[in-house]
Image 1: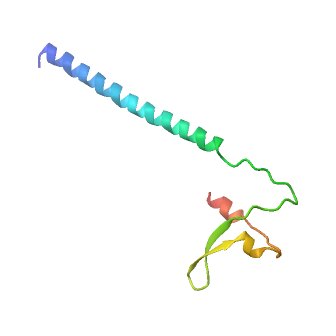
Image 2: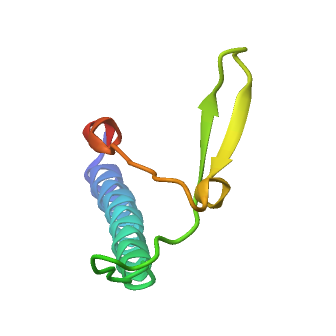
Image 3: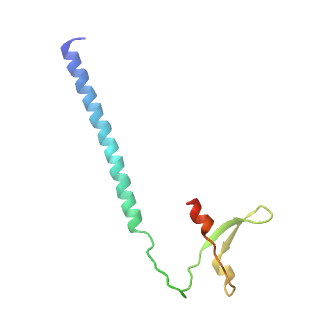
Length: 91
């Protein structure tokens, strides 16, 4: 391999390395921007004791192994206790 070919090979390697690093940097910047925007748009509602809970729905498997949806509004007027301990442990 001649001296000119070695120089050309090194130049090509540097060019490929620069392109690779630029792509990685662009991906990282995109991920950071996405994280910031997602966090900025997050629901920041604060609830106090005695406030009405917002309506939400959960999916569960009933005794017939069917998937069913349960809404908090289905239990209006009834006492409801939510245990989120297991949910928080899996997150």
